[in-house]
Image (cartoon, rainbow, N blue to C red; front, side, top):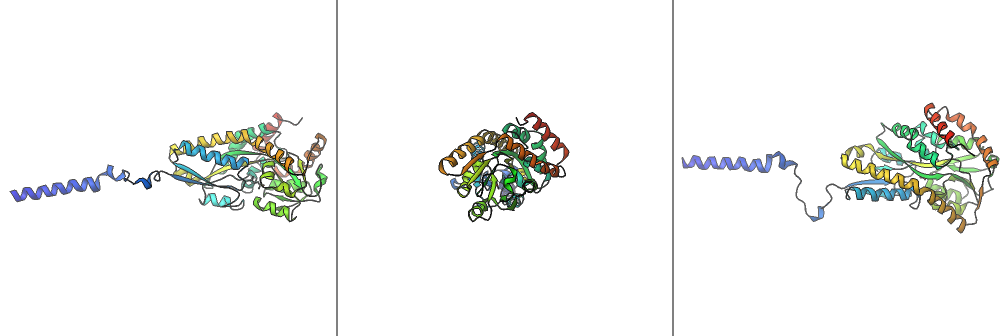
Length: 353
Ligand code: SIN
């Protein structure tokens, strides 16, 4: 009897040990104890954010602002590593990098997105937006919403639009006042069907070059000029290689902020919520600060260089608007009617004086 009792006790003890150590379903999902070295690593996620602009620009500063906001909101559970100046990927390969998950976020100029999604051309149309409020209305309204939805099914999610500024022409040969001044000049351009049509309408020749190769190509004289925002002209030192700038404000350059969709889906609802909030706060920040950043850069250019800065008169601007009409005719074939109608509606609210 004694032997039976001892054997039974062993069996019961064995079952209880197995249950608590091996088979207890609660225990199996409980986190393992870890030492100080591992503290905080378990939940930490890293967003690699690649972009081609300099750090002291609206996009560079917005990326930093976003990093700080999301880190604060998630108690450092989400970290952002920023790779600026094309340090990781250039304009040509950042789309593949984000769709393949080699980085989690990018923020290309909307023009570059238009090479894949024709409707995005609407944002590039010359004189599409008469002032900053018109741009905001497009980004925050039906146009922005439609364009972000357009990206679905490509393993990316469009998060928002970030602001930079209106584009200006620079060149090294002559002061540009009228469309006729363009026909002897060779320009560096971003890839984009509307950009191509715009320069064709002006009879100017172009080369598509990556942003970070522009300075060198201006320096060696392969191209005579380029179009860009003042903050890009200043931060990339294009003004040091250009004798003339025309404040033409002929089109707007802003950014599509894009995240890898698998990464987005892997985030908890709480983290998605924090990221969305951080993004909204950053977009608001860059909308409010992009104008002053560009303004401060034109003051710095004027102080530190003898580049001639010309402003278009109202009469001259009319000639440019006239010259750009073929660009709209061509774009009508590519851009959906709904978006063009919405653009017209916005334009009628902000018509030129
Ligand atoms: C950028 O602002 O991201 C670059 C624009 C350009 O390629 O000109």
